[in-house]
Length: 142
Length: 142
Image 1 (cartoon, rainbow over the protein chains, first blue to last red):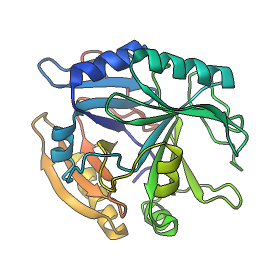
Image 2 (image 1 turned 180 degrees about the vertical axis):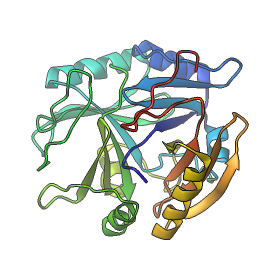
Image 3 (image 1 turned 90 degrees about the vertical axis):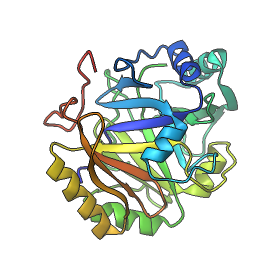
């Protein structure tokens, strides 16, 4: 199994609400005709939105309805950019779970929860430079 | 907020077990000295493993202990490669939740659950070509 992820699918309870939220953050997705999914090209992979019940069924899991041990992060190039993205997310309908804060590892981050409760860390990590195209390549020594 | 994800962190109950599982799949990670996390370079972003309690705390969420509405997919280049990865995952300690099956959208996929219950779809999607470097770029019309 190669060391990569191709798609991250977020289960949502209201697809139109979720689409509107990510659109308000500036994300442009595509939907196959007649399909109840949205796909966003995100660098070299894809982020999808799909009904949570469908996703649970297709993933062969029992859904207890809460958070499930996966958190996504979106890294930015400065502490000020962390605050700006958190403000943008709040304006789009997110819950700010933690405002921008200095971290123990020398960075700065905050957390928002999207309308379905998916947790996003918005972070400035000075140890992981961000390329012009948004990708991150960890230095050898982390 | 740019249309990208920088890090996906999977919460785990036993970091050594999780490291051993992903190592058995061929993944090579790095850990900062003394830290209880592992990071894998996965294309232009990073997959992390961290104690689920720490991740829940840091993500400002209540953890009900189950699946949380996020599923990851790893796409491969043929139906036979789906079966091969599922076999490799099973040998590494995964639970095969669904063996390779033809899908309604013209592809072929199966599901495994890692030792912490994280769901991975292993898929051949003939509509989304995989570049030599493993990245996926959706055609305009999906």
